[in-house]
Length: 286
Picture 1: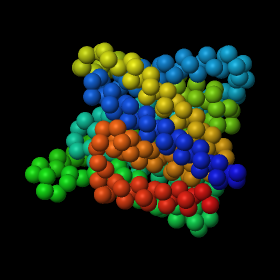
Picture 2: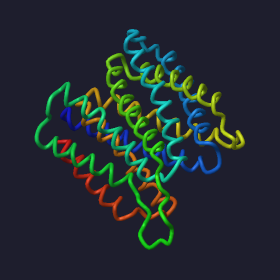
Picture 3: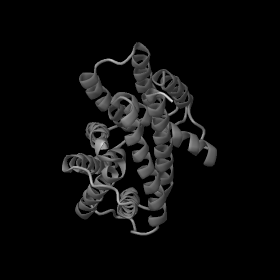
Picture 4: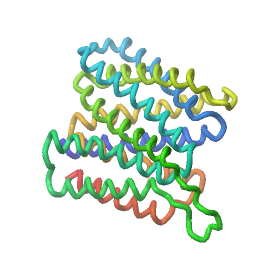
């Protein structure tokens, strides 16, 4: 298998697993605070990663690799808290679309500046992927529904934009940490992420009852950890922009799971986005 094919394959694995993690977390958030679900999943996955690293006697990488991973885990968790706050402030469609687009664009721009332009087909794939992310994540209120769309406050868009930049920066930092080994990179990131989430929970504790989140958190956290591991592996085989954009297509997996399990029908806009995403993946894998 070629390097581009391997990068595409691991990127698709990552997007699929991340989509599953968001689906499980979304289900759990109907009964428990979302941040508690994320924090519990991060904590349990950290313990598992530590046990694996110690049990398999994985060599500890250099301090720089651990620092990149820890910084990515810390700021990525803060970005997640900002994202949840932004979603709670107004209409979710535009905020989620802005966050998803910036998550992909930040590493794409950095990669283009550092590595130069990819092949013409890959450029077409990157452009198509950005369009797909916008179509998949931005779901305006359907016409004729009888309900007026709730306006999105500027503060929500600002927080969503900051979250997108944070998520995109996390993908860059994980790429920088990948040279030191996947398991220790993810362990360092998880430790810093747990610290960030606990700090945020201490400053702004959820008002809902603190129960009913552990099982969902463990499943979602496990899937999220696997998605991170697949993403880091994808960056080791291919360019940062290709790996980041393919992984950023994970909302398509969430939508398809919701359609299969909950019978929630995707909109025509989302189906068009999924179709364009498939075309983008095909172009990026050449």
